Length: 482
Image 1 (tube, one colour):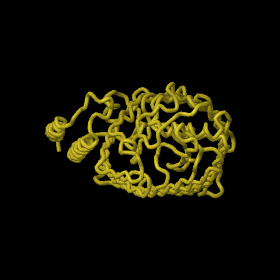
Image 2 (image 1 turned 120 degrees about the vertical axis):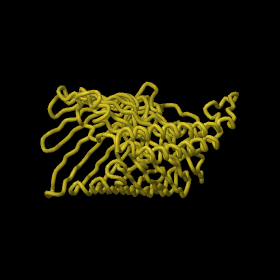
Image 3 (image 1 turned 135 degrees about the vertical axis):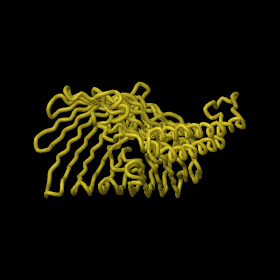
């Protein structure tokens, strides 16, 4: 079919969508904007906002499905490493895009949210031209059904309605060994694994050596189940991760680093050695030691059950201070043994120990433990043995499972996670689908002293921004991507 036909189809569909959206936005006439209210950010009623976002998502879903045929007929490449010779090639031939609609359901048993929602994601990335490429992406989420169960949280505590999660410029110079990225992008550094807002520079101009700086001025968690804003809780002036990496003989890597924030400074070193015990089995032994110097010395006051973005962060600071350890240095010792069989099966056994002073805020922007739910693992006096398993079958079927127990004088935490995902083709390589199912259990029996003005004997469990203390979650999703 000719390009003129595809152009005509897209033009007709665009006009139809504009007409439908204009009708949907007419419901604004029935919404009380409450401009006199001091709660300016919540001036649109919650129910009306849900109706609006849900209808918009349904329209966008229909739009993606109809326009997919037109996109499928256009040339594009998913090879993001291709160096373009012309600007038009970088924007079109070597560029890549991802448009997807996801239906997500979370059934909670315990104090967490039960959710049914729809999420639309749009991403575009250019090919490289003279070493540079750019990308942009957004997430639009809307609840179809929400049940609070035993939690005080609402849907917006788990997912933002809209987030521009990616907007970056990436530059590589292979001659001088420089790689730089700036904007909003997905980070993968120690203690900074979420979407980062800032910049990062890596220098690899010296053989067997690299140096890296990540400067983050905000961090957002973007997953199927969470879409948070870019939070600046750790520091208003930014957080800075500086590391070096040395590749030594006998497959030994050493990685010293410093992590500087507005609430603490951490100095650490990671060591890793890789070796084979048979032709098909690889082994990796990892050792990670870090010192954590906290300099938050005064407790904050907070109200349990508020939905402010920082209330759990403040409670973590309070707990550390009121435990009498606010001025003490603390340390983390972490050892992990990994076995890899034919790049198909991975097994991990690990042990994490934290001194009684605690390092409870170190993982606030992310971590590299094989768990999504790591609450309490870096709190004072915690000792955590864990085991994890991963399988990857040709990038089509992936399975991850893990179990851990965290033990301390303040109580114990047990959690497990099992996740499976299957990727399949709907129409050639143009339209793909993915389904996923997971089960998570978190059972938090800790009780840390955290006195308030109203209640000097107040205690709270180990917390982080995931929410909830004791719950079992069953999650499932289906995604269609173009």
